Amino acid sequence: MEWQQFITSDKMILPGKPIIKGTRISVELILELFGSGWTENQILEAYPNLSTDSIRAVFAYLKDCLQQELYFPITS
Image (cartoon, rainbow, N blue to C red; front, side):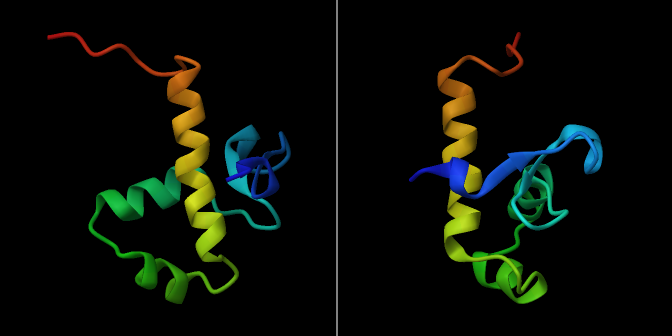
């Protein structure tokens, strides 16, 4: 999955947060929706300008961020 085809950042949109290209829908929002129990179908119904591939790109982007150690350390 080439997430770069679907995810971008523009300092003029949501102060530079990663978003799905052609929308103002942030990666963060998609993750929040899944974290709240939404299904992929519910997200696609609520945001018809998204595609299955754009949602999958969110997770590919997140995976790359974690591989590059762009995360907050968890302490116990």
